[in-house]
Structure formats: C-alpha cells, structure tokens
Length: 216
Image 1 (cartoon, rainbow, N blue to C red):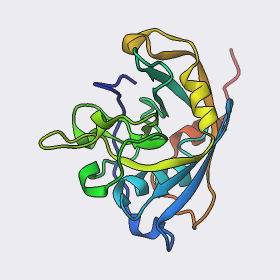
Image 2: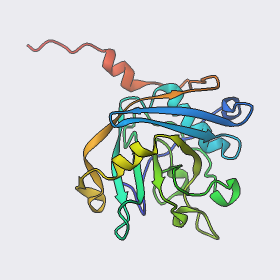
Image 3: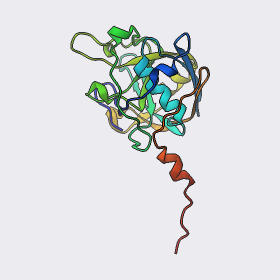
C-alpha cells in the first residue's frame, strides 16, 4: 500500500453501523501486537460511519494477522508523528466504501493518541488502514475545502507501545517511512458491546484452509 500526503489506505463502506454502538457510544478494542497491547476507544456516537467501519473489520477478523508497517516522524521533533497499520492493499480483506466524516463535524481532532483513517487523495478512499498519532497534528483536521482525515477515537492504554513503534528503524518507500521490521498485529478484539460480523466473503481465511496440492 502506498499513501498520499501524510498517509494512505484503501476504502470501505459498512452496513448496520447503528447496531455497533453501545449505550455510551464508546467501544473499546484491544490490538494485540508483537510490540505489546494497545487499547482503542472507538467513538461510534460522534463518528458512527468511521467507527462502524473500523468495528466491522474487527468483528470480521480482517485486522487479524496484519501489521503496523509505517512510522512517520517529525523531522524537527522525531518523538512526534504517527504510526500506520492495517490491511495495506490486501483485496481479500477490504470492505465497501463509507462516507467521509470531517473532524469539524465530529469534533474528534488529531490530538495525542488519536486513531484516524488513512486514505488516498479521495476522502472516500479510507477503509482498511488506519494511523495513530503521537502528539497533536492539527494539519490533519478538516478546515474549509480541505476534507482532512476521519478521526474516530483515541488510545486509552498502550501509548508506550505506540511510541516504541514510532521510534523503530525505517527506510524504503514513502520517503523512508516504512518500518524495516513490521510490527505484527496479531489480533484485534472488541472488549465491550456485541460483535456484528458482516456477510462479506473472508477469502483470506478460506485460502488458509485449502490444503496445498502435493508436488508431482
């Protein structure tokens, strides 16, 4: 996957978003990574479409066995920036597109520990890739004709893990921002509320179950 501007991603729309919200509208998700656990509070009240999309990926297991693959550090203050993870360009895992929710409408700004959707130039291109900020990045917030990025929650536990990933060695594409050793996202698990898996095919699981043919 290759992102534009500060980041990149794919797209996806999700049905039945209203079902995903708990009474408070906050759903906690645990990201079990090879660098340690990160717990996210997804705000489905203020960002129902974006939060619902993220939870659909979680409930389907589409974020299981993927990775954090990018670390974008500020040149002037390298302790700040963002890390990016998700399905990259894996077409087997992608869900349909969903409406872009601007930060000046949701009120969820890009502060320290914000989780937001990565995208290409088209605001509706967000989907199965996301990023987590370290320090505020107001340039990602919507203003005027600029659509910004769709923030939908924040880290409530594990910012030490996020910072550790941010500091890892990088190189390669995206201006040298690709992690030299990707951090495995082993499993994403909803910690409250009722899961609502989608009916979309899970081709990556089916392929794993198909036994390899013996060599002739």
